Length: 234
Ligand SMILES: [Zn+2]
Image 1 (cartoon, rainbow, N blue to C red):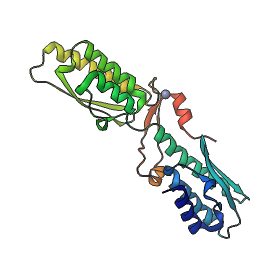
Image 2 (cartoon, protein in one colour):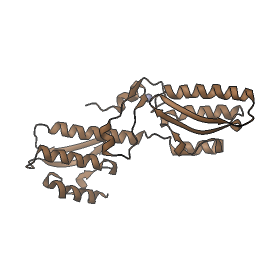
Image 3 (cartoon, helix red, strand yellow):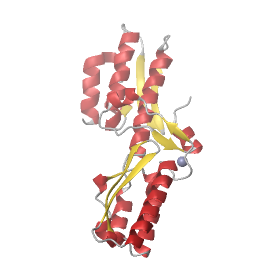
Image 4 (cartoon, rainbow, N blue to C red):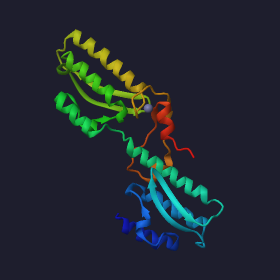
């Protein structure tokens, strides 16, 4: 939906509560549902439309300016900001690696790197995966194995799907077993946002998933620092 279309729809549904001009609702498309839900709750809280929303915009997080006050208004605003934060953060840390990184990996290791849709891990783990490939490449082991996918199944549980080629040398098999086991362990113990040691499993809220089913959500293993910045305080 364009900004104008979205604004027109809100005006039609929620009347004068909505700012009169489309430019005062300046948000990305993935937050439209959050803003629509906000007006829905606002209209329940304030059926006579005594409050006026002046402006809704993004300033590192979702901001909502309202003229007037009412018991419960802060909660409604806070919930919308919270839902928006989760969507924005999920978009910042999707459950797949960066496409530039993937291109560089394919350029270096060719078909040994699975397609992007078979790599389901967050970008904090890219360095560990790249180190594994470099090890296999350096020791001439990439020809002995087909790596079909690397996927974070759930927080702190990453699986490397690899099939050994028929006729593989016993020595190569032992080296590969060891390297995959070690890498799988590192991937499963590292912060999914930055790659440092993971400390805590962060829970993703279900209510945001309902707001936008296209957003990739999920619990994730994070270090303390990333956990603090990912969580929404205040
Ligand atoms: Zn981290």
